Amino acid sequence: MKHLICPLIVSVVLLTTSTARSAELRVAVAANFAATLEGLAPDFARTTGHSIRLSSGSSGTLYAQILNGAPFDVFLSADCARPNRLVDQNRTVSGTRFTYAVGKLALWTPSQRHPDAAWLRRPAGRLALANPDLAPYGRAAADTLGALGAMNGWRDHLVLGNNVSQAMQFAVSGAVSGAFVSTSQLIAHKVSQEFWWQVPERFHAAIRQQAVVLKSASDVDAAGAFLEFLKHPVTRSRIESAGYATRSYDTLAEVRCRR
Image (cartoon, rainbow, N blue to C red):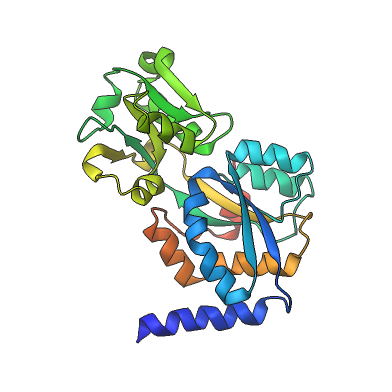
């Protein structure tokens, strides 16, 4: 019975808070979360009447597009630094920034079972990761190599993608022996866990993925309904099943964003 009640509650709450007319929300979403959001979009449409049009890429690229006037309504970044900058630059709707997911970094080695820290300390072949300057998962990967003392060994054998989706594609194509990707990607592609290692968070800063409504939003009410949808326990449970954590941060922790 509980499984029937929860979806009903979320439907009633979201239909109550949505606008009378339907809207198409333009959502700029970090590449790692795009597949998860695509899976959530039909439920959001069903419960609110609003649809979502996704534009995915690295957080850095999407941030630059926003600064250049791209007409997005909501930004789902893979970090907290860029949403925080947009707040400081007065480009967001006040009070909308929050952590919608905490990402999990993984090392995937398609032809090597049971990779671990020791594998990274013995460089062989080439290693793919997202560009650390553009993508938070790439930054976390670089931090992990640094923490393990493995960066110098890999430095001349790194292949940089624009985002984690491209880093994963390098591994799929056989161009690299391993790739740093998001756990959510591996779950979505049903990759056997014997071929990947979830990197312990102690090797890198938490990947706090934050959302924010932009001042350029054409329908602030619809955008607000979308953020409420992401916060709902039913949605949070689905996000966790997709390979993320959804831990709560207090107000002070949300403000203190150093990345």
